[in-house]
Length: 186
Image: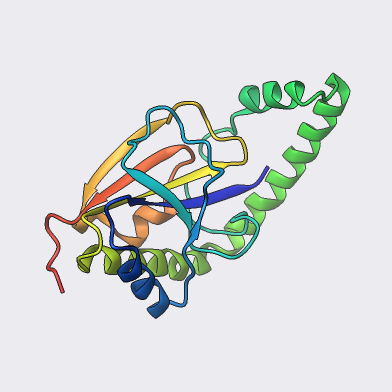
């Protein structure tokens, strides 16, 4: 199961200016047209990836929250059954998933010191986007390959809450929306 960090940019945004800000951070802006949005997501946003990798599984974004809640096993089990997987194959797959999660937990513990620079980079990029006049708000959503029909929650915040610590605590299927209201415009 792969994870994806998606950035939500309003359809009204000045995309050339957004691309210029991202270019200063050496990041691409890759549209995700095939993304099946949860039903309760605001329709004003289009979703993009800031990576050329196939997925964002190696990311440390959300690393402090991923171990706190169990993965959505029942939803995933139903999805695999719909794809025609048998009961024993699903159980073996979940056993392998558990082994991988144990390994990831060890790696997360070892990499705790390296998580902050990645979170600081995300904070800097999104802060720069909010400082420019290209967007009034933007969002972040971390999803797995099989996105939920509904969000787990929505978190709305002002510019001041766009901190590296928040990025380390990003939760799966929670939409984070950041607004420019209290930002000094450049």
